[in-house]
Length: 141
Image 1 (cartoon, rainbow, N blue to C red):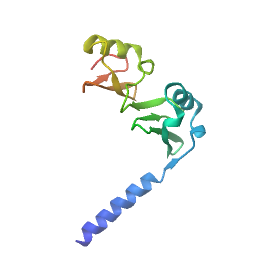
Image 2 (cartoon, rainbow, N blue to C red):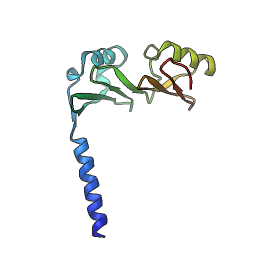
Image 3 (cartoon, rainbow, N blue to C red):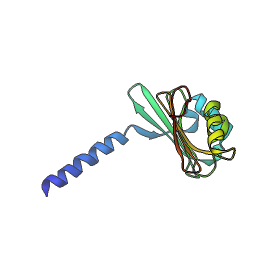
Image 4 (cartoon, rainbow, N blue to C red):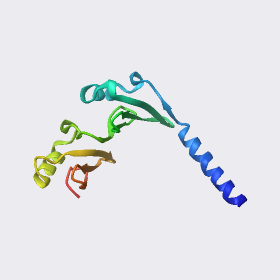
C-alpha cells in the first residue's frame, strides 16, 4: 500500500513540475504574428486565457476562447493547431491545396473543425467526423 501511495505522490509531483513551466500571460505578451492572427480571425473579447509554456529557449503559446476553441502557437507566433469547437476554422487559414482536396472529396459544404501542423505534415478533422492526414506536399495520405 505504501508503494502505491509513494508512486501516486511521485507521479503527482512530476505532473506539477511539468505544469510549472505554463503560466498565464497577457494578450500583448504574445508574439506579434499570433496577436495579428487573433485580431484578424477572432474577437479579442472572447479570449478566456492566454498561456505560455517554456521549454528551454523555446516558448509555446495557447489561446483559449470562451466557446471551447483553442489556438496553439510556436515561439515565432505561427499557429501549430487551431481547434474550433463551435464554428469552422476560417478557410483562409487552411492551405489552399488541402482545402481543394477536402472540397473535391467531401463536397463544398465540408468544414474544417481542427487543423494541426506537425513537422510539415497536417492533421485535419472535418465536421463530418473524417480525420485526414496530409504530407508536406499537401497530398492526402
